[in-house]
Image 1 (cartoon, rainbow, N blue to C red):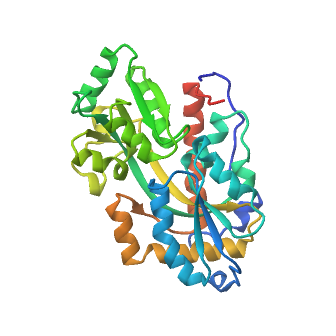
Image 2: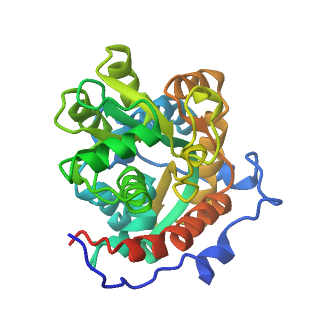
Image 3: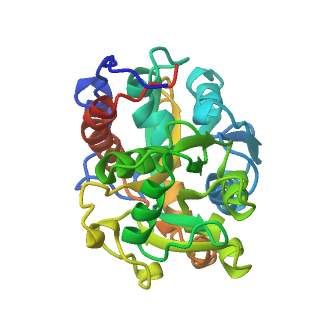
Amino acid sequence: MRSLTSPARRSWLGGALATGLLSLAAWAPGSAWAQSPWPTRAVKIVVPTGPGSSLDLIARALSDKLAARWGQPVVIDNKPGAGGMLGVDVAAKATDGHTLAMGFNGPVAFGPFLYRKMPYDPAKDLVPIIMTTSQPNVLAVNAARVPAKTVAEFVAWAKAQGGKVNYSSLGNGSSAHLTMELLMAEAGFAATHIPFNGSPPAAMAVAQGEADATFMTAPAMLPHVRNQKVRLIAVSSAQRPDNLKDLPALSEAGYRQVDALAWNGLVGPASLPEAVVQKINADTHAVLQDPAVRQTLDAQGLSVVGGPAAEFKRVIDNDVKRWGPVITRLGLKLD
């Protein structure tokens, strides 16, 4: 599964797409784009992970209020598989002007470095619309099998297992997958990756002892923490997030390079007219400010982001530039 072959570098920077996006200074949710006569039919949001996953929760939190604004149904279509690529590919190839996808780091930014061939080219076939939420991953372990309560204890325990450690993730190429691979490289222990299609089954694997550990968004792990099946050890962000103040950051344990943020957002096919991109952006940003929506997302440990399409594109660009060399250095290949 590992190879030292370097994948072709992908860059979202420059080009006609960047020219068409609004700058931070010029962007406003109430802009004229919001008056564009769209949609004219039901809008489909493809979720590339399973029901109950963070992406699924976000899409469903937005769907009713977007439908009310647009006067058309918003249909959620779960298509998990291939580390999120199956679902995102549906949106990338859509020609009806009414199909979007919930994107995340893996199939939007990391994929070109992990796969020799993808069914779509993220840089050419997708347009970023709006970043909906972001959140760090938490390092979680099976409470019965793993005695560790700190990062140092976990690393020491993992080294003592002689490579007989399993870890789960929500899918190949996800930020959770790459965060654990980076920690393994930095800390010097070995483990076997068990990928799942979404966070709920990956979290369940740790709770049931099929996997010893995982990096996962907090919402998926909290029910198992309450049942005392899982113990949380640290967060993957550089600093402790406000809603997880009791958990130390990995940087506090000396792993400053292991700083990973999972993000989610709406993407569409590159053929989507700019006016439609800006309308979806403005309406989704407005819905994200709705108190009920924010409360729903906050309760799941998801930090609302919003903002212009150009800012979402900048986040993707930064992930490509930062994680591409890391993936290449680790020698990770998934095909």
